[in-house]
Length: 109
Image (cartoon, one colour):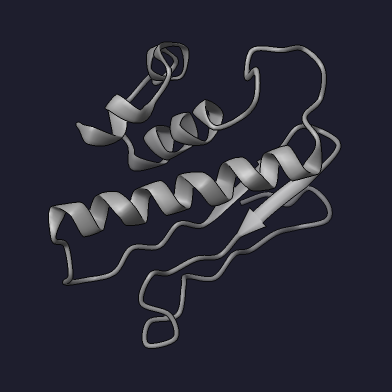
């Protein structure tokens, strides 16, 4: 609930389901300058938005007193020109973040 309160109305109303990924993405969008613009974002804007959203999640966990388990936030964010990729775990190095896999060409799965 507290995460939703951090989001802009526009970001919140674009959430279609209930996954943590959608909510994290909405938080990232909230942190972009003029998120509804039609021009591309700079790489520094994308990086800053992901970094801020990650910090906000960690702050929420701390406020809630969550100390058990671990939180991983693997993301790939692109505007079609630039890409920001994170592989994050709050308990690293004791708990390594899950792996990211990518492919340079189409693969049938």
